Length: 360
Ligand code: KG4
Ligand code: ZN
Image (cartoon, rainbow, N blue to C red; front, top):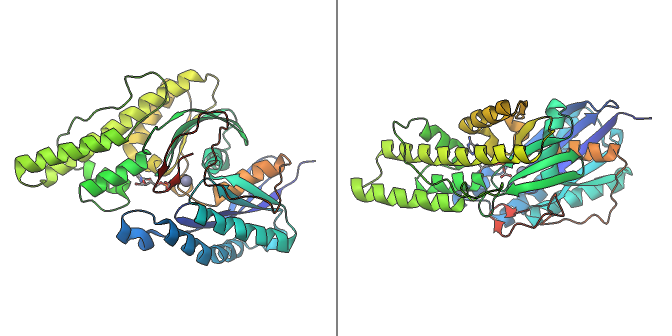
């Protein structure tokens, strides 16, 4: 007979150290008892991106503190948990190892089962944690390290319909912010700057003229660089208003590409219960509004989890672990940390490795 399960989740694949306790009720309902995230922005700020060595060391220093906090906030002891779920990849390997080693130690000490979770599955299953979205649904995962369309049919059944062939959109927002002298992380600062625009700068919409759901954002970043240099040459510097127009043009181009490719992805898979989105870029108001329209036109609900659960966190890892645990999946102490781990093993692997780790 189905039972309630209490799962401790651990996350350390990029620059957020997380621990969380999540309950999955016998009827499949979710309850987040705690969700502790210790960010590292200050540690990496001077370097303009995540430095893997610094990230790994900070995870190793903080992960046990995060676990202590998560158990205390949830008001449970480790022995009250039914399993330990840990991100086993993909990500920056030094960081991934920190939580995997910690998770193994906790599981061995308390005699609990261990479940290795794919970080992307954590993001992709979040709409079930927050809104109990039934399978199958379409997920657009857009973050600083990832960009892909996933058809989600089960906790371990993902079909990748397409994704970026180079940069992730968040990475492009961050690079554009750097080019324009705006603070990191670039997404929020570009969005704020774009809101002050009085005009726009027309930029290309890469790969829109090609069929399918693949995307490219690196050329767009180069187009921003050229436009900036032209403006600087014309005005002897970059006037604030022009910078805002450029941010506006860039944001509109990203939005148009993501919205149109989402339309195509939905057309490829009829019978979805919802259009869902996750990842830091899902915080963007213009993008959310555009996706809402795409969902409405397709007659589907649009589900965007709250921002704290869109970005990296351990509650999503605990939940993905809970879904697999309920289905009888278990790992053991031989669980390996994996820098690369595509969710859809049958689709062609994406090339390259970004600042935030290997692209899956
Ligand atoms: O999911 P996330 O927290 O971390 C990973 O990449 O795993 O996403 C962070 C990314 C950053 O690149 C940041 O610039 C972008 O999400 N971002 C945004 C916004 N807020 C965060 N991009 C566009 N608009 C935003 N409002
Ligand atoms: Zn992530």
